[in-house]
Image (cartoon, rainbow, N blue to C red; front, side):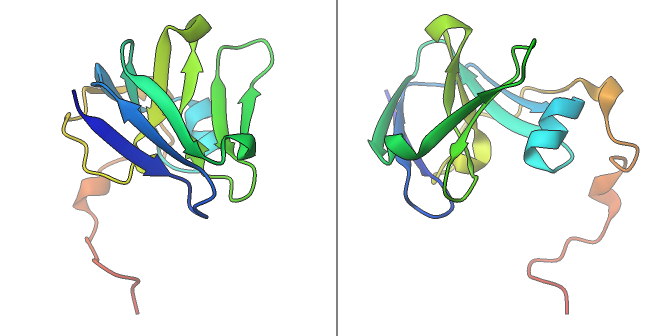
Length: 134
């Protein structure tokens, strides 16, 4: 069983995930776009992996959008998305970008594509620039 490490942008919060992921979804719903500020949320899901906070657990803030199951955990200092446990402890959701290691599972699917932003089309066709453009 593998252990994956992750952290927030400022480094105050760090964690480990022990176990494997079941799915890796790229979600295009309006809620995931709002809470990431991007075209989609990229989240790994596991019903068996375990989350261990290594440091900064007291800096983790949880938010659930009222009247929904949309939940987000984030660092109270830098705002980085962090793992959270949902569905009464049955599901671990890990933002892919919060991991400090490579992800061995390929994306499972794009979901809620009917809610995609109107500018989220053919993004793979645009120039790929490895650094900040000059």
